[in-house]
Length: 265
Image 1 (cartoon, one colour):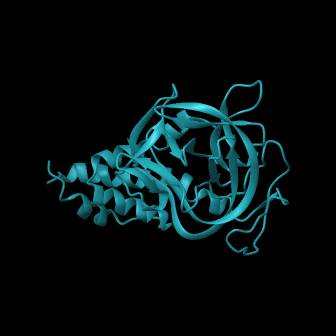
Image 2: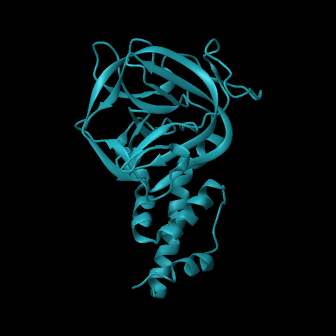
């Protein structure tokens, strides 16, 4: 059993977690979408478009500013390829570490997990035929000709830029040959400790443009979530994450104490 003092600490920590993670889970519903670096402000469009609508000719359009991947995006696990919507907390997914080497990391949080939402996705195809889709405000690793690789909004990646594909255990650069915007269903953003994620064979991140483009900042902001994920039973972590995604503004402290009671001292 957990002592009353530790229960209070955990309860307070959970409150901090809700506040910190709401930056990711709730920001897109409350704050304006930042301007793209190479275009005027995106214009929110309340129109409901059928899944599969091609909006490439209206580059300033977006349906929602959420930063996620769509249903059907593929991630790699130790058991093989898996659609992103089937991931759960504790699953291990393939990531790319700072030196470009692949490694598996656990999913400790979801900032979005919505099967029904239809959104505009920047869809990028490389010379090898690989395609990745992400909402325009989601950061990918990209490299413009003659420049260093840097975090770039998916909506800012252009034909001629390079993305980084996984080959074996390392990454190789591949030129983008097509960039479109298409509506798709589902919003998913599973978080890893490094902030990295390989999606559809391409090096991506879980970082969004609500904050400056910084992997270190992501690490700092999600520290409470990572700490509680490792401290609490998986079922409790899932309950808290579900509460965040549901937009619950607060959780009763007594309920939190009840949740952590089964933990062995």
